[in-house]
Length: 173
Figure 1: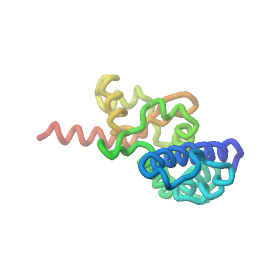
Figure 2: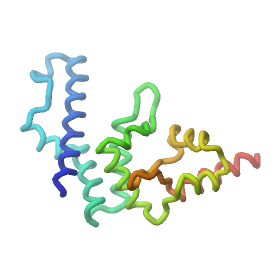
Figure 3: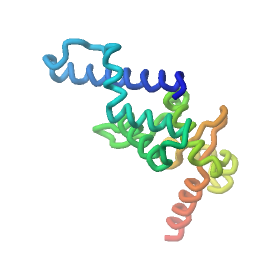
Figure 4: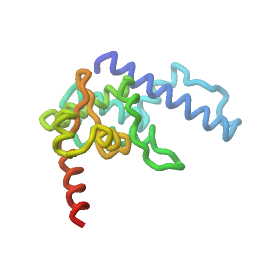
């Protein structure tokens, strides 16, 4: 595994573990004696379910050791953990998330998964026959997943097609 990607995994695990400690400490003060992840904890974190999911995403990008389906499940697990609210259900990641190191990793995995199925925003607009604002609304609602590749926003063509079919069917009713 490339060192910069291993650092991303370690940073995400540390940040989430620190947050978990804060939450647990606030609800049960006697549970923890320290409020930050210690250097010695990182190997345990890498062995956690989240650590394995993050590692599988990186291994999918870098090698052929991880199947596409497993990488997709790992991405779903990570995004659910990060963005599922106990009060509002699943919330799609904000656009700014994809500018973070983890967001970039996930975009790289999506780019590899759907390399031959990526389309430009212009093509998506043409297929869906909607305004830019409506396309943005689809992204904000989680109906379309943006893939950021080399600084450009792309969309998964089959996802756009599926959305278009749903719109066509609902307009026929």
